[in-house]
Length: 95
Length: 416
Image 1 (spheres, each protein chain N blue to C red):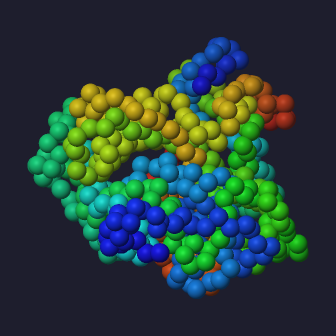
Image 2: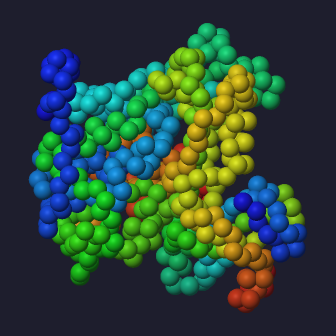
Image 3: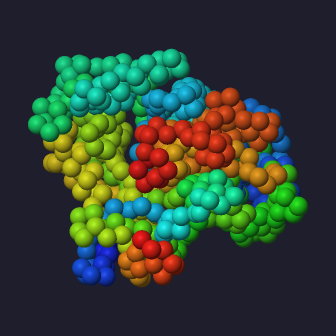
């Protein structure tokens, strides 16, 4: 697979390590009353779709950025790549 | 019809006109007591033990394609019970004992060959870990033997014991481990279940569950609605897709694992060997091909094919211990979809929906578990209580912090 890095252009997927579903960006609020349940679901449960999947890849052998890659899990086709930090900041996160 | 040597001779003398199909091809009935979704090894074994051991009636197995077309026909055929943790080892040893009596039990030649498995040791720390594992195996009634480098050289003279980076310092052997003709496992269980009255319904895809007031009443399929008192799901890599139809999210990700077969060679490799410093395992099939594999590709996938970096990694692992492998050409490679759980261990449990039961999360170790998985899932379906050796395989273990994590890597499915 080739991941089209937003800054560095097309890079081989073997330069990256894979974390999982991009929903892992949305860490639950530890102060919430339902925090225990929220963190259980955040940590352990997955949508695991067959089709488009937004997922976190880390450019370990490159610029060490975290990317959100939109990839089809049935065909391995990558349709979109963005910086995870841009997506997190767009949701109001400071870091 | 029982198969026997006498039967073969009789048929040979009468033109082989008396053989019948090994199982029927029935139309689905409107209602069953128990429906198993998934006609792979685990689903067929479940139906077989439900009918034969637990004396249940009116059972069907639904398969969207043909039986045995999934992971039971795609794995590297290894059986073993060399686990460490209390939640796992009694289960896998129970499975190995079932393998040992399986062919007589279901009257089918599954070519079960206890040729032994050898896990190589490459460092002092690994030797300590393997001694501990061997002791755990012995405590649970399995067999284990620590071998020296000289003992390994006598049995496997072609191994590169002096590799500068990964010298072979010994090995942990389980002599009762071995290989099985994997397709024959599906066929044997199917034939055995059919003979006990189980309906095996192929080309029947489940499209949804009919759930009312928290109870599962049956399933919608491509061949109409089928009512059922109890529904058991055993669909491996498709677990997340299937249970999403019941609005469940699982502690499972689907990943692709590749496997490889070389061209046919003369007998060279007497048992199963695994590389301890990387991830590589190899055996030789009775047809002569070297059957081998390594890590999963490491990203969510439903494509039954992988990518080249893992091919390279697997072949490097092979070359590190087994330099003569470099002269063999690769004949075939393929991928299967693994239901990777969050702690690397499986789930055999009721769901929160009454009448809906789940068997999955086998990661890439499901084949060796086939008999015990079927037996324990049948026990759960028949008695509504877990079998003692599968009592740790609960859904709630993640929420309650009772993970069964052999590798200790945490909730990261691509690392198990």
